Image (tube, rainbow, N blue to C red; front, side, top):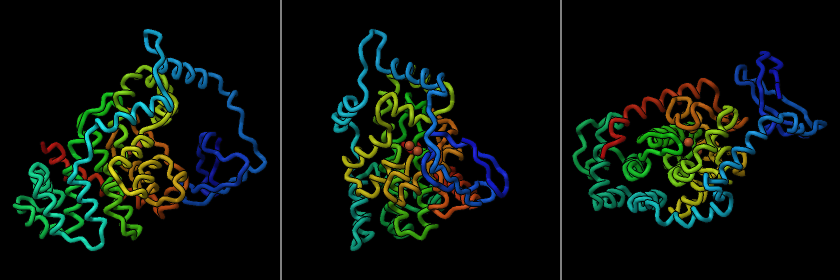
Length: 358
Ligand SMILES: [Fe+2]
Ligand SMILES: [Fe+2]
């Protein structure tokens, strides 16, 4: 459906599936920010039979997905999801130290000594924390010599953030063939979303900058689990995405029966991530379905900023369907987004020298 801003005359094309036919709704013009009200209370949803070629093509892609070259059925939907969930216990667990640090940080009566003690007992993580503390991003080049020293120089929140980054980096640095991500691509994307989420949370004067950072780090962890299943069905995914009209999340939903954000939510449960963060991760592509979870909107915006910054090309390329109304919800204008984009880029570049520390 085409709409036009009544003020600046900029025209937009909104996909029919995103239009609430039968309702009155409003969107903001990306150019002049004017609110455009569209009344479709008397309009019925158009019959999609008017586009015969696309559904036919997609049906073939789904059919191909469910059949191997030997004619056997490949599982999808609930059956596949349960099969995957049964394997979650075999997957690398969230490092114990990260879980412990998150628990300490969530307690109002905790202190930095407790946090420092947790890492001192884990030599590999402690070494990585020190490397990161001495990276250009934290501006302590060569000055931090011990965890005690780091805790004095960096403070409670930053030390907690460093533990998360150091603890999760190995898990998120793998190459993912199904998603066409080279080693380090998902990691760069994840820290970009973490930085972006924290910046947006702090601008909104929330007190959950640290939680937003952590949610950003793990928001796409579902891809780690789905990657072999996507790779197994590569031909179907390629066929589905060939017309360039869909997102990869839609391909996951159609071909597998669910997407990586649903699996990430299950993983969050296994990792005992607090419910608010779990819901935000589950709805990071559709925050309007999260029942007003502010962090889900923040993750969605930060995900968009990471992608327009070029942090994650892979299967999604630069394509990202941002939901209408997210910038309004977060009270952000185009200039804010430009500023955050630049800030995120500088942060990722400064930290990137330590991305593959091991
Ligand atoms: Fe995602
Ligand atoms: Fe993402």
